[in-house]
Image (cartoon, rainbow, N blue to C red; front, top):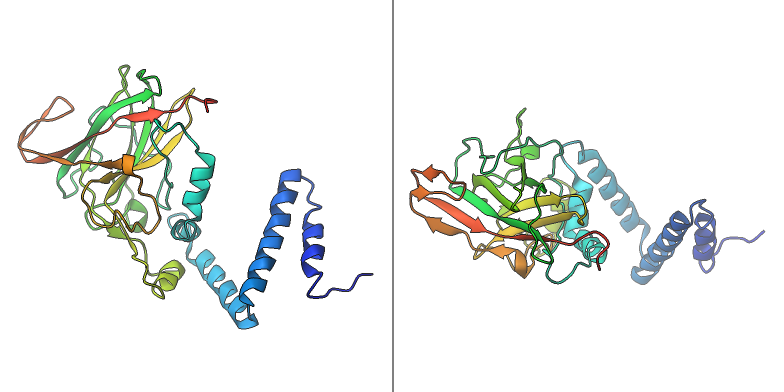
Length: 288
């Protein structure tokens, strides 16, 4: 029998977890054990510090529910979400860059017609986001599903307010010519939720807890890699300090002011509005 010591505990624990029946699971768990032990050794982790960490993890789980994903938020602010996104979305340089999903996506958004208004009368400056969905060769991609969601003018997502209705989220289809048009309201920059364990941790640092103004998109269609991304408003605050590291230069878009008159969906507006033109470029499945 080999007795446990500080010198051999890592090898013993890694060997045990390396017995997982699935080879990939064994690889993940063995590496996890080794890296966790290496971290503890590097910082000379104290028992009190480890107990505080366990209590933080407990609190993060306890505040999470079907409307709040505190663990996703933790992954986002630590930069881990964007690292995983970038490692798993090594797309062609001409393809639209991917970013984080974030903690506020809700499945089952209602479908809207071309130019349909997903703001449903909420206060804010009308915004039309329009353009085409195409592939790397410039060919139009019709029938693409654009799942869209955003925060309101108070920086709140549907998951953060009490409502029984879909709020500032909808699904759109690109037309045969690849064209799409989303009608919404201009988003504002906002603070991530700071009333939980993640916020408590950020309060101990000089990290800005704000995100720049943006709209989320999840674009899917057969034969192409799914795309999770944001469009950020050009000139908005916090572009260079996004707390979840999501900003990429190709995703920064001008929101141009328009006087009352024709709108990109073929209609008219009797109030001033904003337009943002953007073409989503999708990578065909299996193309490197």
